Length: 500
Image (cartoon, rainbow, N blue to C red):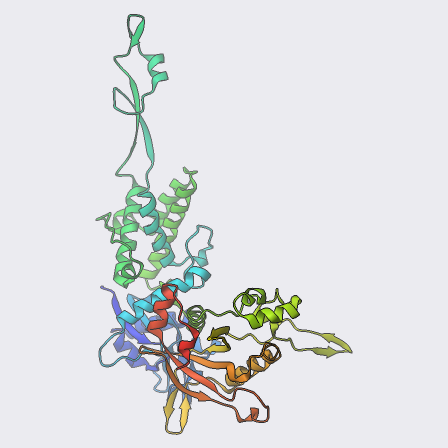
């Protein structure tokens, strides 16, 4: 059966019948296995009872009970995908696109998802949180099928097909003369006291094109490329389509027979590269078999915590200085330099480390905890001799207005923290003469495309009694496609472009 490709939206509520139709399942039992597997990987969440009537940001929160229990016919039960990226399950290729993307009719966000997956790849390079490169040292439960496919393609492009070379000794060939053997085992013709050899031993290396492991390797590389093409990942990764074998998997025997042949070869090899390749081949046969049978293994390239990716995108594109030392900042901002001169002990501190920790007195003894406030983004910006301080918080939210109500918005604790972040730095900002009017306190939220937009503000009246404090936290809607393009290409956007 050909693979079925479908797109779904992160956080959108779907009924059981909607999912069954959308993913083209005729059998209830097969569809039930499909749902159970997605729930087991905590990709698909069950929404029950009154909360299933309308979408709300709280629905994306989770508990263990959201991934277990019944999945049968229940009119009050709905499902949502708590995941962004690509996965395969039961012959279905599933693209889960971010919640800020809106589609109409039968259109699919193919271009947008290609960019999102490239963002995930970029994010993954530094952290290995999404796909770990295959190293041969993983445990059985740590190996991801996609990392294996990438490994096989890259290894082939660098080293070629698996081969067991055999040295063949011949007479009068054209390469690698064996002079010592020739002298020892042949009789020369002597002329003018000089020996002339009519037969010269030579040596050349050959390998058996029909070697079982070599043929198997060719098929695995071809199969990896085929699956990368079917899922659309070949285009994203930029790999060529390598068709090295016309054989089918059945030509090599069942999984147990193949594994036994690989184990036989492992006992004969000592080369590190060959040992790693053989072990990878063994894992691939096992995982591929399970995936084709609809067992536990799925191919995944995505994350259940896309808000962390959005935070990283914003921090890189707007170049957060949160973890820069004050001594370094002082080379670019004279007020900070003056502060370091008067407070040399703080010169080695990072900007984030200026926030005081709570002080606990217990049993008459003063104690400080390890943790305190941790803002997402802190940065200075200078323009025309003036200095500004940005306190930014990347919020992966898409607020919606319903009359006088707002939904899918950050909670009151998120708003309160933005004021507290300013208060935490007030002693420092006062000492370098950066007034509250020069502090920019923004929420950064995604939208699909367009330009940077000032979408409004939020405020808490309880701060009205405190003088000289920024009253508003402004909401900036940022075009995700623009930020992703900058993020992927390691480019930045000046902070003052947020001041629209």
